[in-house]
Image (cartoon, rainbow over all chains, first blue to last red; front, top):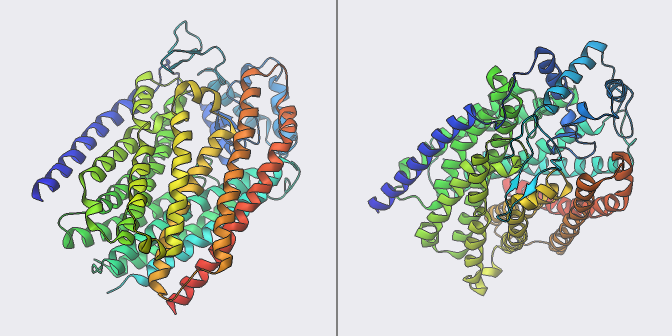
Length: 146
Length: 440
């Protein structure tokens, strides 16, 4: 019985040690891409995004609610110009309510959308699937895939 | 000394949370076909957080109530501190009210699962710490060779505390300023948070099987411990299938791909082995508890197939960002977690009221719930296939047009969702009545 308890403790201890190392690496080296710090305006835009719970309906990288469209690459959408996006936010459409953001706040939203857009693609239509089931993503602003 | 009162309090609160969750869930689903519905008063961004936090509360509170009951009442272990259990309950109760209030006045956290103002995480963490102290002090003092469920409840609690903190690392500038890092850590914490409550819930399922079967060796076998360690590894390293599509480090995704394939096999193997070996006489006892465990077994099997497929990057690529993800979430949340927790609630009811037998209505609702759930998941799967096709192949079709094209899928989803609501409603009301009668 003592042996069993000792084995259990050793296995859990080993897993926890691996977990600590793993977390350290993930926290310091999560992104495959070269990341640029969000600007102050983008951080304000992100805060507005959170305060208004935009993620309830919208997604970035497919993560969020499904009532509205994914906005990962809205900043580089040639049809949805800045003026279009600002109008959409304040006028609403379909299930999206009207908001009353100031011009400064709308600019902060745009700065946040641009920062997200620079990190990658969703959907990643240029991704390639390998025989192993692995998907090689197309990475933005580089010639590398991963 | 008994914690029976607080165990029952937690269970009542859990059942009320489930009621709120399913009521709001049905209400907001109408916005998929009537976009103007409640748009100007309680729009989706305001009501979805209520639905999400109520669902999470149901799982967490039912698990806590069950564990308090099993440790103190069923196992007759003198609780380290009854007062701590009481403080824990009132902290969670008052924090719950504060969360709903903060959402209603628009003070929203805006992160997945953690939809409330971040400051409210402080009392939640204190509550978990009190639970952890009470649990470990009680169990360490009285049990030497722990069956696997004690390990699962212990590690589930410890990792719950860690991942609740990790979910708020975004408040640290170095995390927040790097978008991909922030996104990866956010979904790492969410995935592992779910893994942590799975430890609590799956521990409860093993406890129930042990008690219904009357064989304590079941929870001390080498095989069950092997699966427990695999589950723990999944909790720690298997979260990244949420983030396959994010440009994160490939090794993180490879680790997750390799390890996440194992998790569902774990519970399936355990439950399947249990059901095969259960004598007919024992099957007739604890009838509702046994029924819900049987249902969980079937849903584990179905979700096993879905989970394994979604963990393959080539398939995940087509399903990520579609309702197929919701299908998987609902399948695990209702099909597995809710079925196991309902088994626990009804097991406890059978102890509180030994003369309690489920009514015909309760049994019918149980069947109706499971049939409705099957079609509800099917509707989400169909909607997901259509959305995925639009997402990857759309040729100038707008989002609005795609949503209109999905109208029949959404009608199917709402009708079957109402079926799930009605099935659960009868079971919740019956369980509440029995618990409240049992307390008198």
